[in-house]
Image 1 (cartoon, rainbow, N blue to C red):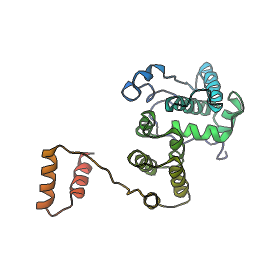
Image 2: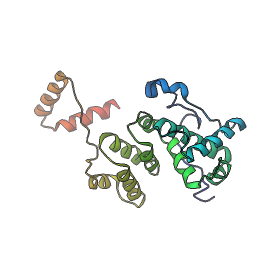
Image 3: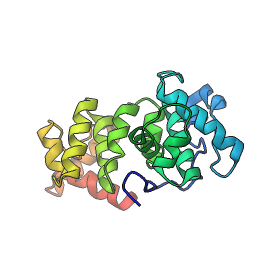
Image 4: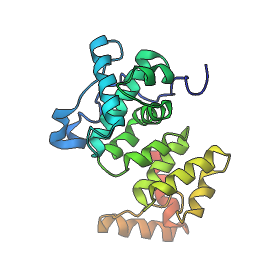
Length: 218
């Protein structure tokens, strides 16, 4: 099976095509009621997915991030139903390329924590396409870099390409002006006071104290 035909890896615990994030009112508010599910084992649902993929490719679904996630879900369900990217592209309504199917199916297969930020509008779907090209923990780190910094879609594409060529993500992010792991937080005054006091008396950086506390907590 070629790269174009191989099924995408998935970190999803829920069935492919289910609107776990799109249907979560906590994430998408009233739009959750409009979420559409696609069942790769239901012929009628697969037919709907094929129609949706075609409309998505023709930019007929709308340009909001939630409609893009619906299109991504349809791509993923169609791939699962047809068991390959190539067959999914052939089944889709209209002239849909294999690369289009592959990119968006992988967006739907991103871990839930990342997809929630896409659904909330913190990560542009077009940036998520490139995050999905990265494997392992790097996809999380690249996603959080987008959330916490003003990275453009071009920056994300460049980072994903560099990582896939063998560069370390930390080095790539530094070249883009991002300090890996840097996060600005606001603490209640009493917590801030105690953190500073503890760091001073223990002769440690506040960053180290916070990191240790979070490691123990998480």
